Amino acid sequence: MPTSTWAKFARTPGVYTQAGNENWGIRGVPVSGFDDQGPATLNGAVSVFVDGAQQPNRALTLSPVPLWDVEQVEVLMGPQSTTQGRNSLAGAVVVQTRNPTFEPDLRAQTRVGNDGERGAAIAVGGALVDQVVAGRLAVDYQEGDGYIDNITVGGDANPRRASNVRGKLLVLPNDDLDVLLSYSRGENRQGENSSLRQGDRVRYYKVASNTRAYDNLEQDTGTAKIDYRLDDFWTLTSQTALTRVDYRALLDFDQSAAENQEVRRHQDTRMFSEELRLGYEGEDVRGFVGAYYGRTTNDFHDCLLDSGRLLRTLRGDTQIDNQALFGELNWTFAPKWTLISGLRYDRERNQTDVQQDDFSRPAKASKTFTALLPKLGVDYQFAENQYLGFTVQKGCRGGGVNTRAGSRHGAYDPEYTTNYELSYRGAWQEESVRLRANLFYTDWKDQQVSIRENNAVFSRIYNASSSTIKGIEVFLEQDLTSQLSINAGLAYTDGRYGDFVTGTGQDMSGESFLYAPRYKASTGARYRFANGLMVGGDLVYQEGTPSQYDFGADGKVTRTHMSDHYVLMNLNAEYALTEQLLLSGYVKNLFDKHYITNNRNDDVIDVGAPRSFGLVLDYKL
Figure 1: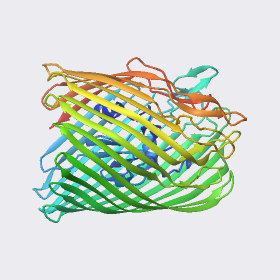
Figure 2: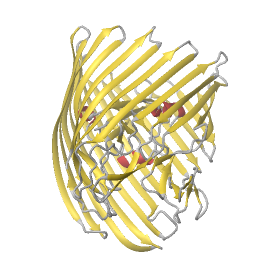
Figure 3: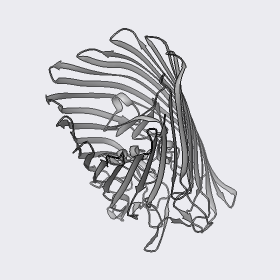
Figure 4: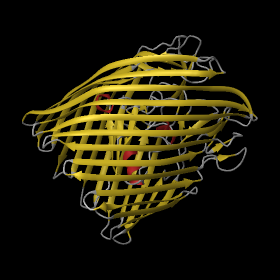
């Protein structure tokens, strides 16, 4: 991810992130949700789309989405189920890469940094047949040694390697038809991202496992978007996506050097979707109706080995079929007043067959869910560049089946949210001052929560009776002069379980959501000198969060494992060497802050990245 794009994402109020990307989320909800189907999970709470193709859950929690040659990143806060569909209960991130044009275009980049960071990227495009066919090819490769050392087997514990190739073809057969075809191939490999605690001492950036653990993900995605303009008002759009993911991993089962037990993991995932929309664009009315079909399949196979000898196996497969009818209508029914409405009927079927589980027993489950998801709101322009809006919308995420080894592989029900949101967007002084703010309340029913009960090795999934999220997000930007701009953001998010007692009496009623920071604040500035040098920096504060609850014999919480509060300082600068050549540099975590990001137990923890720095050289024709 380019430094500037990552910085914008990290300081967005309401979005929280952690180094290594294992856990990030929107409004206190992790990208993977609070449930835990197991390592083969196919459900998430935040959906990410790249060029119209939804990204698999495993890719979102393993590695950052590749953002070389990206045109736009849009973060949609709160439930987006009405238009984005499944896995959008808490929000969505929509990424649009650069499309081909008929003008010649060439961009190239090379970068180096500490801990062996290095990489190169190139993008080239232009006309293949003048005004009829245009193409674009983008290639990106990055690698690094990582910042964690293995003190048992020696060497780097989390080396990283990532590559991505994307090709696009734009075909314009006539004035009414646009065809955009794309294909991307990505591979990401990384090692172990945790640290060791010995007694009261945290061994930052040290692990002691006797396994050279790794995660390796290969992904191929093809998309086809066809726009056919029926007349000046109506457009018919078809969006087709096909994705194949091959995931392999080697894990240290005991996460230590005490035993020689390893888990070899293999998952083969296929995702197909077809969406057909009929859109209308008039002077006072804009909207669309559409139909959607999607199928996701996943074959999973885990093996537990002891010194190379097979001990136990988990294998099975899951198929999810999803159909939907949906629509949205925006109607300017009076000057400065716009009505926003939407509706989606969603049907989902989950079929899971755990064919072998040597930890417990095989199981087969099938569940079908339906939901009607409305959205209704109003937007009012009460002055020039001043907008006030209010929206109510319902979100839903389908149920699933716990595929974690040793569990009872039971099916669980869907979860639902109703979100009430008051929003403001304003600009003054010829739009040199810009302010946006959101005030929201989310009522969560039948929330899916994963709990490891006392004296249990594996987790179970419950549909909690109720939960709530309430909060506010504010972001201010101001161009003080043509050279100096500043920004500041603040988010307060309070997510708590309601009346929630597990089947064995563990009482989490009133407790805060795991991993969800209540407070996040940021401030930054950019200054451009007369000679073209630009320098910028930002401060980001994030509150510590609960990582795990311990319970007593009476079922009450006796201890809360917490991550650390932290403040990070980041700097960046850029200078135009020539009209086409740009040199930039960055420093993340300037003061080398050491902090814990996940404290599930007292032995193995996750920590934030140390100080990192690098140089980037960009060329643009």
